[in-house]
Image 1 (tube, rainbow, N blue to C red):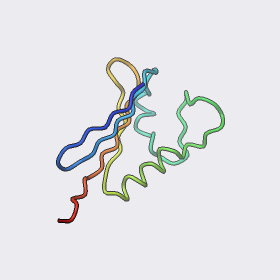
Image 2 (cartoon, rainbow, N blue to C red):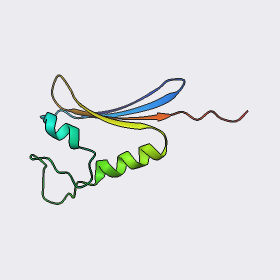
Image 3 (cartoon, helix red, strand yellow):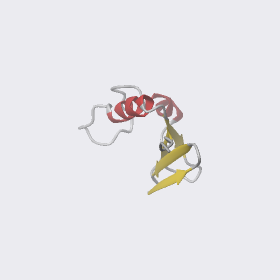
Image 4 (tube, rainbow, N blue to C red):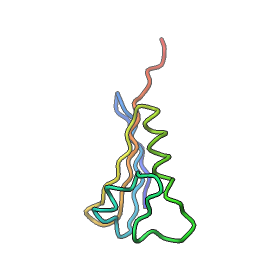
Length: 88
């Protein structure tokens, strides 16, 4: 598992990746839908709201959040936020 931060002139990108089995293509399309829980969701305590809430927060900051399976296995979540220029 790893967490990384990269910065360009216009964006800050945070990536969180794991080494698990990844997510099926069907589940990958639904990850950000409120109350969606994939077939292999671990535990019974979740309600399928975490990524839906994360997307709303990122959207409010004019960014984007994406999920992709890694070719070596695992899932990566990326949050891309626009950088705000400091006033002169």
